[in-house]
Image (cartoon, rainbow, N blue to C red; front, side, top):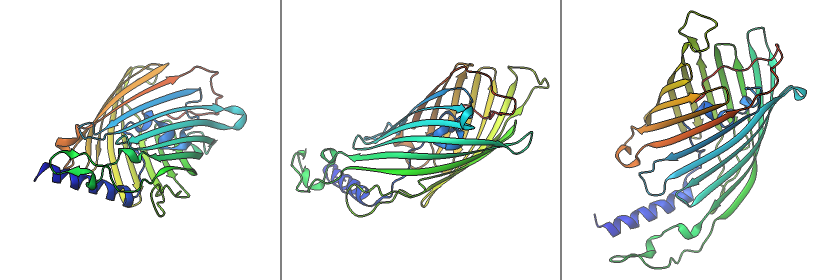
Length: 321
């Protein structure tokens, strides 16, 4: 196929996507390294103040990559009988479409029994989505020989869209088992930048896992543990199933996940009482394998010290990455 003609098709196809596709949330591979993004009920589960930072570069081999960054802070507040959290996420698609979310979170924890606790979280989000029309290309800009040399006759549209969104989540956990459910975008806010109505579909997430010690000693700080996990997510017509396993030995974490019909994921992490750092790489297994160059993700977490929790307060034991 002629190269210039191919560029024309790509430009037209990109415009169709901009007008007709329903939006979806950006993806993070290291779910538990970005706990507030996964489920608002995680706010305060570490008890002491915690700062989490995440960076993801998805499909760097394709022109117009997807880069997502997030920063969060949370801690338990005894006077409120729960946790408070702040989450800021910025997503940039193809250096053209940007989405900024700023969320405030409150979670409440109560004991069901001596061994089992439940935590409920509520999240309010201010979002701003913007489109840089000047970076879009159209078919009437292409010269058959010289490429993109003309000005488009298309009338600039888009600009900026702001609004408020709400989410909620639930966690149930004991010493060695945990599960959770989160519902994001409860009101399905309109995100349209171009024309008509474009609601952001509700995102439903279910996740569960266990922590299994491989050591006979109950007092060892560096014993080996394994943690099988499962996560299911649905947003609109999109469905995703993730199956994974973590292995920890002392300060080292290793993990492997499979995201159905999309990617095989490898993770490695290093942790201490103060800080945790993790890296993951998504090996694309779909038809885009050769073109994407996979996805890279880095996480960093700071855990500050504070007064020890009361005996009746239970922190959740789950993977860090």
